Length: 113
Length: 141
Image (cartoon, rainbow over all chains, first blue to last red; front, side, top):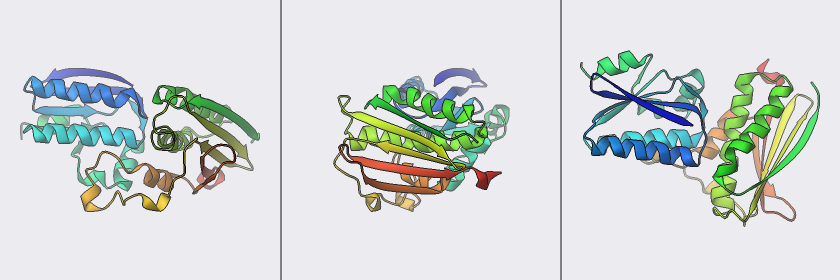
């Protein structure tokens, strides 16, 4: 998994690319989130459009990221959730936990509402 | 569809997950299997391989994980075999229970059962636990 990041209207957009299946993937995202928290970033969108698929490790990374942000008075939303990931979020009931948006711009704008 | 039977043995480390995934996906794609089905099989296989590495073999890179891939009569069968002491699948807590929903782990077996036709656990002679998933390809046509 590759992990890019950019900022738009004070919202950090994380862009993982590839497959999220375990091992070093979790560490990379974990370190990125903690780095953001240390720099006072409280609004994060994870753009999942470039993720081919993920297994439960990927779901665990999303949950860990959400918890990290919440514990630091921040929030995390998901954008561009593919059909494959949407089905995993649904069967695991995590669709009730995450806010999801069809595009990163919609997700970014939701922080202003 | 052509029949297939192949085997891969990897050191028990998550650094080898990508190789294991490539082994499974490339062989299935060569048979012309639908990409979405290949993804489901890759998701579930890597779940079981992670379990073999982390739980079965307790993260010991000196141990091995065996991956057996077979396609016959429009059915994919994958065996993931570790060198551990055994596993009780009934001991896994319900990941849908309210108290478990925000846990970072514990939903792998549930996801596998949701995406494949069958999942069974047994002992492999000379090894440890064998997790076997089957996925019927013709159901999805």
